Image (tube, rainbow, N blue to C red; front, top):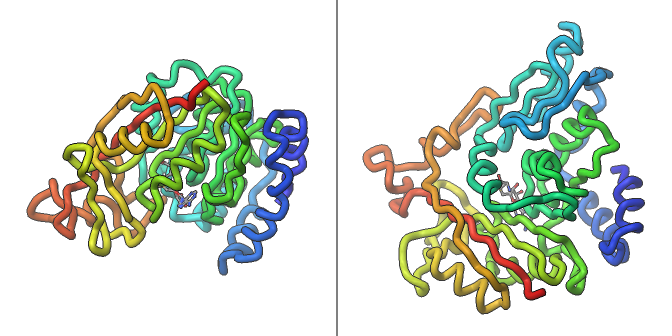
Length: 325
Ligand SMILES: C[S@@+](CC[C@H](N)C(=O)[O-])C[C@H]1O[C@@H](n2cnc3c(N)ncnc32)[C@H](O)[C@@H]1O
C-alpha cells in the first residue's frame, strides 16, 4: 500500500506524531492479511484505464465519470472488477454510469448528520470505522481540508482504493486498515472532527472506544458519535445474550441518556443529541451489489419492532460533543 502522499501530508501537519507508530501498525495489519486479499487486489489491477470527465462528492451517489467516458468493453471490464468486490455495503456510488446500489443508503445517514455539522471547511477529519469510505468522500465534498478513515476490513479498503483510483490520487482523502485501538494519542493536537458511526456497539469496551476518539481530537475538537440505542433512562443498557439482529459482535446498546452520561464522565462538553431514527428496511436492504441477508431477515417476521432474537429493533442515535478548549 502506497502511503507516500499521506506521509508527506502528515509530516507537514500537526498530526506528524502519528508517524512514530503508523508504519509499524500498517505492517502488522497486512501481516494478518485476509485469504482473499490477493483476489481483491487482482480485481483492482484489472480495472480499465479511464479518465473521468467530472466527479461529484456532494451528490447522494458519490459520482465519478459518466457512461460517455468509457466504451462498452471498458464498462464491462469495470463491472466485473466491481462485482469481485461484492458485498458492497456502504454507498451508493456511480462510477462511469455504473450504479452501485449498496446494501445501505449511507446517504440517508449523511443527510441526518450533515445539517448539524456547521461547516467542515478547512478541518482535519477522522472517520473511525469508515467502511468502504463513502462518508470520507462526503466529508471531503463538505469542505474538509483532509480526511482520513480507518477500518480493519480489507475488502472495504480495496473498495476504497478502487474509488480513489478513479477519483484521483491527488485528493487528500486516505483510508488505513487500522482499528480505533490503533489511534495515536495526539495530546490535544489532533483532528478537528472525529466521526465514529456504527462502531461503538461492536466494541467490548465502549468507554475505551470513546477515550480513543477523545485522544485523537484536538482541544476544542468535535466528536460525532452515531450508534445503536435502546429506550430507557441513564441506567439502561442492553447487552444481548448472544446475537443482536443476527450480528455476533454486538456488546453494549445503551440508552441515549446513558450515552450522554458516558460522554460527560469522560470529560466531553457541549453534549447534544442531534438525531434518533429507527433503521428501516428501505435504508438497509439486500441489493444486487450486496447479496445475502439484510435487515428484513434480521427482524421478527410477526413483529417488525423486534429483532429475530426478540430485542428492540435497531434505532440509531447521533450525538455531538466537544473536547474542552
Ligand atoms: C456498521 S459499519 C459502519 C460503517 C460506517 N461508519 C457507517 O456508519 O455507515 C461498522 C464498521 O466498523 C468497522 N470496525 C469494526 N471494529 C472496528 C474497530 N475496532 N475500529 C475501527 N473500525 C471497526 C467494521 O469493519 C465496519 O466497517
